[in-house]
Length: 362
Ligand SMILES: NC(=O)c1ccc[n+]([C@@H]2O[C@H](COP(=O)([O-])OP(=O)(O)OC[C@H]3O[C@@H](n4cnc5c(N)ncnc54)[C@H](OP(=O)(O)O)[C@@H]3O)[C@@H](O)[C@H]2O)c1
Image (cartoon, rainbow, N blue to C red; front, side, top):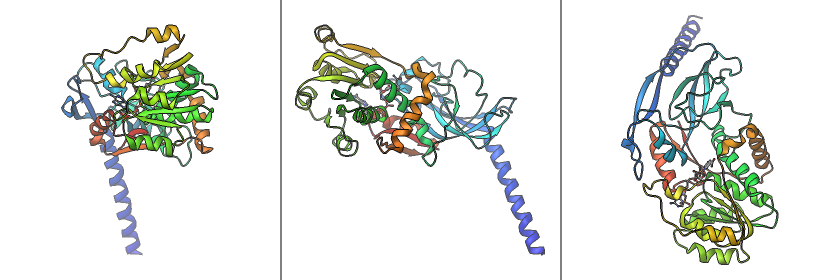
């Protein structure tokens, strides 16, 4: 009797210690502050990891703890607009630890643009602070069953919606057409190619290694893949798309895009998603004039930002989820472990180390 009483007391005090530890940890956040503007390749010394005392919760507030953080190419470009001293921008999936907001109960997860920080106090009903980059208001991660919550940053989140809306609404692809994708083995590109296959297109990917090209063809059913670091893209396209190209989903820009656009068919459509080939360059690269191709082939080119479809955000997530459940959409994540490795993950993604979506598991 005495020994079981002792066991009980010791268990309780362990629990109370762990609660206290959680409270103490949760009131101090770790965050990355942007201290030097990126020039050329970002350097670890451009950021500083600091601690921040969090405020007590007001009505409507929640305290969240990051579980997965996203590293994305836009961070390289958008940070240039940030004043030095800002928290590094970015999306994360975070667990609610404390809540004074009945719509956001403890234990649920949110997806939001809290930046590179371990813990955050926020009111999800209020617009995010002006200095905080945000594509979408924070929202509860939809029920994705046994799938990893990290997918809320990729195939079932921002990059998934970029692929879905950027292809379907901008290129308006038709069965039997030929689509080329640059940056094809990344988060957006690998997803775009699979949606195109679902819709009966011939799909050609351009990526930066043989192993990425093999993955695209062998596992994701792309019809062809071109390694832009080894092959002459224009010559390879002439073979792979002998009848010309109807749609081009462009993640990269520069010479690769020029080669694609000059092989497009009449009334071809170009969806401009990004131009990562120039993100690290201080001077924009000079490339061949594109207007003749647009005039004589009567092409259409349209850029987009995925927030254009914020009012249809959950349509995109549901559609992608359905394709995953039906076995029609595969995904890959390159997961870096540890909040202290945020920079390494970001830098690695910019250099092409990732297959599919690059995320950090805290
Ligand atoms: N418009 C929007 O709303 C929106 C939303 C999300 C993303 N984006 C854009 O979509 C593109 C892809 O983003 P993501 O999140 O899916 O990233 P990602 O493709 O997963 O990762 C970036 C990839 O870019 C490739 N890359 C890097 N430098 C390159 C260069 N000089 N030339 C060719 N490829 C290069 C690398 O692959 P390799 O090994 O193949 O070189 C790297 O893995 C980016 O341009 C991004 O800015 C736009």
